[in-house]
Image 1: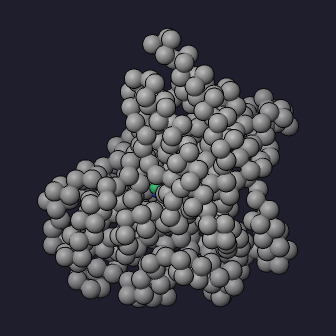
Image 2: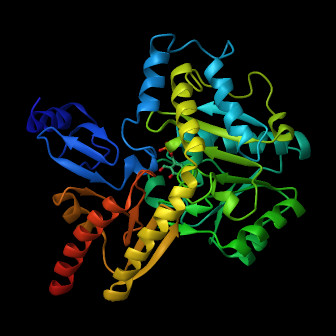
Image 3: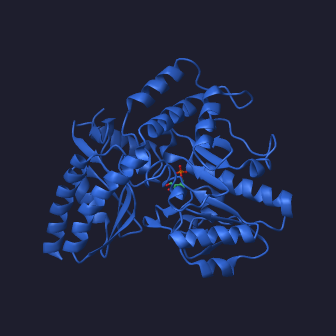
Length: 400
Ligand SMILES: Cc1ncc(COP(=O)(O)O)c(C=O)c1O
């Protein structure tokens, strides 16, 4: 179908809750996407930190094909081989002892909130239910995850929003200390905030958060949905800090594009859930977990976190040249291949200009260009992006 026809039909038949660019991608390989007209785009967004192995990596495609021909769905009334295999891979390579699977990031955080509350309820009673989240956070679009997402616009019109959630400034340990009460059940944060502007937790801050949590019988929940899976130079972002959470939520890159979410926790906390306490029809289904197993194996065998770190360093050197050259380019943010370039001007027009030049990037928090490419990206692709960015930045500078 021609591009115009797809867009016309889309406007007619789809709800208008996304602002979309006028393109339809019909295939992808590695760091590139191809549209209906045969144009190739360099992808530095990777479906928002999802396609970490690039588009259509052979290992994941083959694993999905193989699983498709066996069995797609059975239900959690039964043991599922690929689900057990994926749980083992996640547990063996993280702080956790147990995994739970769902279908998206929001669901993983919803499950994390429910588990933290249930654990507190069983151990300390119903009153210890408060959850402290961070300003600048993004945790999803279900009602409970909206309650911990610091964006009033996303909450507007959906009230009443679930209660007993509050926000404190990120990287401000005194504010956190002041917000803690005897009823605080959990602290929820992204070690590196994605939507909030690619803002990393400071090392001493995260260590102090852990200490506060332990001292006050508070569970620490890390949302690694965007920053997890080798993107920051370690398999999980918390490893950069030497601070393990009690509960961790995962999604995005876990299936390299096949929808899947997960929650990882310790044996002690996991024991708070008994059959019937939480569940989902599709969560951890054979197909999603086959994609997860293949993705995890590729990440582990290729030690992709090392590549994210070294390629990230090269990328940062190039970005630093922009910081030094243009006074309206403020600073580099993030770690590894989860990088932001903070500007003093609106980033949206740069994203549009890059798109016109067939490069996909994105902007968060208004002024931060965000780069979350496939982790297999090479210096060649970074150089290509930098050439385009330089052209755009030159043009902007002459018109400022
Ligand atoms: C840190 C973080 N948490 C949660 C979510 C929600 O994930 P999903 O869109 O899969 O529900 C996102 C999505 O961008 C995210 O970046």
